[in-house]
Image 1 (cartoon, rainbow, N blue to C red):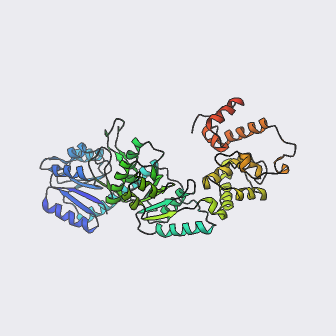
Image 2: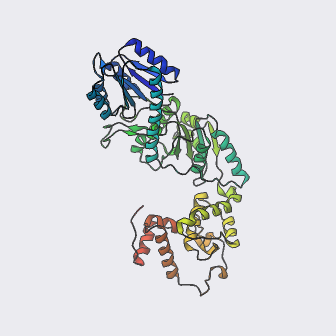
Length: 461
C-alpha cells in the first residue's frame, strides 16, 4: 500500500481521483490548497504527490520548489488545465515524473500512479544497494550436526512466517549474521533490501542518524538530508548486530519504530511509515540486562517474539571439518592456490580444539594455514590454534618432528618469522591491519617485525 497526496482544488475531481486510487489499493490523502498540502507534509512522507498548478493560494510549482527537501523521495506528477511549455519544462527540471493536461483519464492516471510507485521503490532500493554492507544471500549454511540442523529448520519456518521480530542469540562468531541473511533469503521479503547495522561499531552520537536518518541542518555536520537504515530497507529486513549495546535513549526510539512502524528523522517533524522485519543479534544475556536496568523490558519483549539460540562450534563438532573444507574451497581463488584439503593429523587437531572464537576463528585459522602451507594438503604445522591467554605451543596438540621438519632441515626461527610476515603481507595486498589479523598478532607487533625485516606496508584498511 502506497500513500498518495492529491493537491487539487476542484472538489468533484479530487473525490473521483481519490475513489479510483483507493480501488487500486492506495492510501489517499487530499488537500484543497497549498496550505493544507503543507500541513500534510509536516506529518507524512507521501510516496506519490499529484499536484495541480493553479490553486487558490499559489502556483503548484512554487510550492514544489519550496518543499523539494521534503519531496526528494516522493514521485511528483503535475496536472493543469492550461498546459504551457515553460511550466512543463520547469516541472521536469524540479524532478516531476510527468506533466498531465486536464481532463485527466482516471484509469490511465491510476496506472501511472502504480508505475510511479514501482519507480520509487526501485530508486530507494538502488540507494540501499549503494549504502548497505549487504553480502551474498546465497552463502551456504553448513549444518551436518543435529544441533545446527534443528536451528536451520526452525529458522526456515520462521522466515516464511509473518513474524516481525526475531532474536538470534549466541556467542560471538557462531554465524548469527549468516543465519540472519539465510532467513531473509527464504522470506517473502527476499527481493527487498537487507541492511545490517553494528550497534557497537558506530559511535553513540551517530547511531541514531544511521538508523533513523536526519534532515539537513539537524546538527553541525548535517549538510544534506540522509535516509536511515529503516527507511532504506522499507519492505525488507534490518539486522541489528550487538543490539545489547544500544543506549537506553535509543532503545526507546527503536521500540517506537517497531511498535508504530513509523519514524522521524533526526531534526524532522514528519512521520515516515516503514515496513521492515527486524532480526536482532546478541551475544549478551538480554534477560540479565533487563534485570540490571541496562535494557528496556518492553523492547526485550518486542524483539523476543521469536528467539533462536545458535550453538557454539564446540557443541556441533560434526560441522568443524565441513566448515573448514568450505572455507578452504572458497579461499583458493583468492590465494591463487589449489589445495587438496587437510591431512589426517590436521583434521585431528581441528577436531580436538575447543574453538573459543567459534566459526569466525575457524575461518581465520584456515586462511592463515593457506599462507603457511607448502604442500598439497594442509598439515598440523600450518594450523595456528591459540585460545585467549594461551600460547600457540600450549594450545595446539603436539606435532611430531616428521610433521614439522621440511625435507632439507628446520630453518632458523628468524627465517620462519620473515617468511610468515612476507606471505601475510603479500596475501593482504601489503595491508598491515589485514596482515596482522592473518598472523593473529597486533598491528604494533607486526610493525615491529616489518621494521626488523625492512618491509613496508599500508597503514590501514
